[in-house]
Image (cartoon, rainbow, N blue to C red):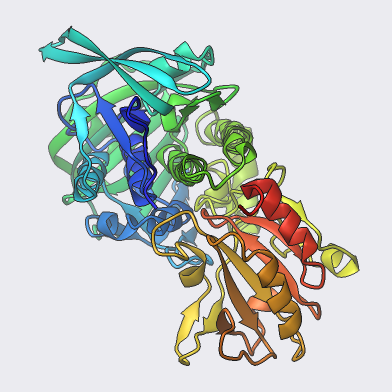
Length: 562
């Protein structure tokens, strides 16, 4: 099933940039059997941790391409967020109390993440080509010509060596906030700068009177700003202070300065910082490109946006990009998808990034640009809203489980009526397909997630969930509907049976006698079909007694059966 490249192509896909999102893009393409090359101008992985957390939804996506467990092995598992507003504790947030198998948030370090992902690429037969820098590219109707130069560095000085021209079908820009790919596409933007505020940060060993276990986060809202205490892999903690910059020198802080402000903010005079591995400072700017794709060139992660440090959403949002683009490219390169499938990447991910930018800006103002009036209002809200600790971060969906694409061009919905209107909690097209407990044919308890992702083990398979609607006589209807999609072998059917009894020769059947999966998906007394994309989002919904809708959808997305 490997995608084949003509002799005049050096790779099907070239990736520029080997940060976490570029590396994940490479891993996703390798998972789908796509030939790629990935270039990075840095000769070595940066030693500092930088981005360091993985929320539940990105973990689900990483798990879908076989990466999550390797990253989890070198991560702390966070279950609780503690929040204090001007010294007063707010009800803690139980992060793991979400409908996901990966509710525990993973905290590691960007250097660790990059190392693990690089090893995963090598295990799949690829490699990161370091010391190679993009200097330009041109695209045409058949592909992209990419110019790559060797890079030599001596101290801060950079010298470019010979330039090599390479040819690919598609180019992915994963080259960070100053992305040359974005600039060359004419998609650069002037970021909005937020005045009079600075971030000072240290990664160091921490001793204080609170728990030193690496399973919690602390956020302190104090009169001049906002502080976070987070674990970093290797027995360290990160302390950052987003605050009014009045009287603060515009330079990296000293360890003594960080310890002094930490003692003041946490109200713990015993707090001690030692063995620092990173002291830094920064100011704030944010913005998003108008588009995330132009013809055969795509942006992922920071190449398309500048995010604010609120809620740890930046790297996590980029993981959606990398994995969502990977299966699209694999399908198109293998001739299994119409152009619409690939062109849907831009409106989906670009729209989500613009929405995230607006939420983060609000969260930043809630956290950092505060005063006595706003603090009073927040204090009152804290007594009424148990999720106030996450709302202060700009969203009550830190875990990113609500990320969806209700306006996606890939959506098609034929379910409706009064029950649909009343049951607004049922997941609709574009939403993440939820998990649910079911029972396999051998009587062993399992979950839908085990049968949604990678239905054929390694590729871009789509899962067709065929619900019997709690009807014993529904199987003939479901068999006929499944047959309508039988010409596309990557559409893998799963019977979800609450009343009907499968027979030999039927598609894989999962028992739902208690109706848990039916209720989760809002399926009542009517048999129904739900088609789930490779990234776990619902694409199509329709009644099983009108299978022609499903066939027409498959033809529109995948092309006629050949």
